[in-house]
Length: 390
Ligand code: SAH
Figure 1 (cartoon, rainbow, N blue to C red):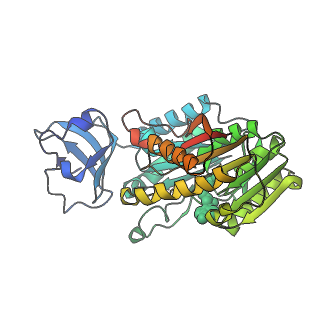
Figure 2 (cartoon, rainbow, N blue to C red):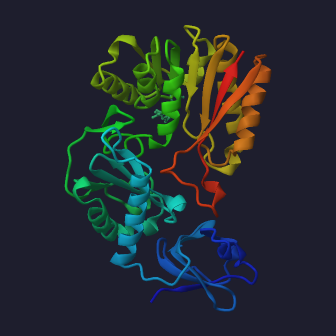
Figure 3 (spheres, protein in one colour):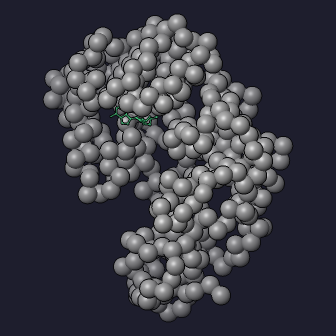
């Protein structure tokens, strides 16, 4: 029997608008006896069914999985996973030149807390809410069904995204494939290691932006700061950049970049730097034509927003001050609490501070396999600007 949570009168409006979260303040029922991850039915104050979702103690109390009364049986998962895989295929993401994409993007795919990434035959599942863990077996079966021969293994990796108290063990749920495993993005080969790498092994969300950087790179001197496994560097090299510096504070990340540069036979024009980007940016060793800044989220919570803005401003001001005249800064923020407009203002104020005249050429965002739910604008987390510096 699925427990029922009743909302306070008037608090049903956001669910009628299909927003996928129920905040604790909207709930009338006593939830103290409920466990984190438990499946619950959400009813309005007068008993009308509103949604089915996972309960969790905290500010976001319910993450909605369905707005209709469904059974979360195998058929439910088969249908949902098949729809998501179909969409990615429609987007041309599974081809001879591309075999890296996101199958499920949490709220954007109406499955809050569930991320599934795909690397040539291997699906890596990462849960961001404990409720999803109870469905792993159905999700795995659904993946085998919808991907067929395109699936060799399913790996579960939630030990770092879920609180320690849940004592999650990572491991294969289906098949087994040794790492590093090789996969392609836009014709470039990458060694992917979901076991030891950051996140699920690769930052898939920058695919389109990397392609864009490639188009600007011909004959250019490029600095790729916060490079992780080097996606931007490889696109620049493939498109005949004259030299590319890849910088990361993690030695492991730099080892990955070097492996990927070698894998694609592009060692001749590549320089690796292990350093703190903020320090390195204070005084650059060369004048660069293109500088890419893709730092980790400076603000994971609202209370860190002000400090994060200061951090983005300082970092970008260093780049803007020193970039070559006629150069291009490509700068990102993946902090969810910093919206597009605040990010734009921050970069503009960095330009004013560094006394450079700039034009915004492109506004960048996350790619189509990281969709934004129409009723969940908070899902737009990746923002980027391509800034021309006169
Ligand atoms: N641009 C990358 C993804 C960046 S993820 C891609 O396209 O794949 C952020 C990276 O920043 C991580 O690799 C992390 O190791 C690195 N990092 C975090 N803090 C840093 C710092 N202070 N200086 C340099 N790199 C840093």
